[in-house]
Image (cartoon, rainbow, N blue to C red; front, top):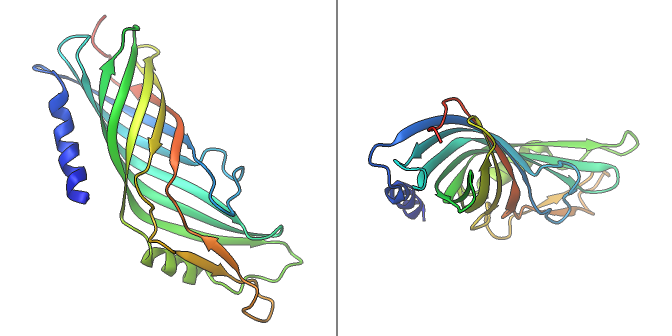
Length: 230
């Protein structure tokens, strides 16, 4: 699977008709919603994932040519598991994002369609707990949860990306995008038994680590160099 992703990333630029390409550089800030998994509070983090990417754009020789867009940067997803009304587990996921794509002009001025593939490369995660002052602390530890998550996580999570964008001016570009991931970040059956510190280890809550989101959101680009004249 990893070899397939690499081959596709290399082949995408060959689709661009750019005999004398012009390079544009930009920063991009993606903001995504995602569906909530079991026990996850959908309102604990308004945008499911945020990030910051560096961008390289290779333009074609004509306005109607396809162009190549390469996004690479960092992404963060914060999830909160509501174990009870007074106990919450916070799990932050950290990724490197790699997303090459082809930009296809439309019949509307300054509007383009974007098709691509990409992968999230897992860097790691952090786990923390919070609970009410009248509730005993957890029997389960953050160290044990971190070790379990590390042992049951995959390194790569590939996805497809589809978007429609509009050039607002020479520097800013706005894009609406959908990004379905292709498989679960965790191995099948990767569940954590979370126990409150009630003097015994009984009465635990099963937290499902299932993570195969469909990201739906927006992305704002800022290009440092002016694009070609109209």
